[in-house]
Image (cartoon, rainbow, N blue to C red; front, side, top):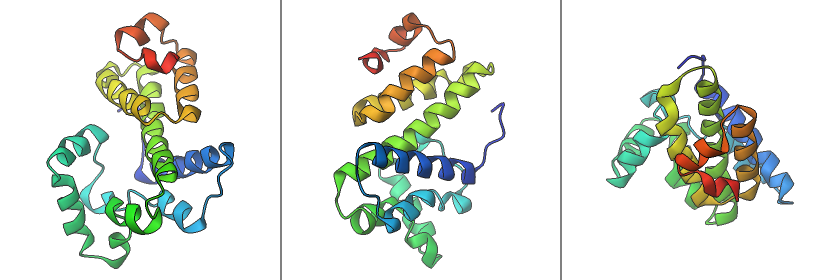
Length: 171
C-alpha cells in the first residue's frame, strides 16, 4: 500500500463508525459491545493482518474460523475476541448490531481502499469491488450513503461505478 496503516488504526476507525451509526439509528450501544468492536481484530496481532478477501476465501471452508480458534486457545484475552464468541456472547444474536458491526468493518476497508486508489494504487480495484458488494449485501443505509459520496469526492465517475457493478450503491 501507499499509506502506512496499522491494525490499531483499523480497529479505532471501525469502533468510531460503529458508534456513529448506532447513534444515527437511535440505538443504545452497550459498553461491552463497543469495547469488543474496538478490539475486534486483536487476533491478528498474532496471525498478522489478513485482508477481507483472504478471510472470506478461508471462511468458505471454515478454515479461518479454525485458525482463529486455535490461536485464541493460547490466550484468555484472545478467546474473547473471536467473531464466534462475539456473535454468541457479546451480540447475543442481535442481528441489527451485528450487521452494523460488519458494515462498519467493511466500510472502513472501503474508505482505506478508495483513498489508496486516489493516491494512485490501481491494484486495489478488485478489493474495492468486493468491499462494495459486501456493503450492498449488508444494506446499512448509513454506510451506503457515505460510500457513494466518498467515491464521488475522490473523482470516481458514475460510469466507472456502474462498470464495476457498484451501481446499487447509487440507489
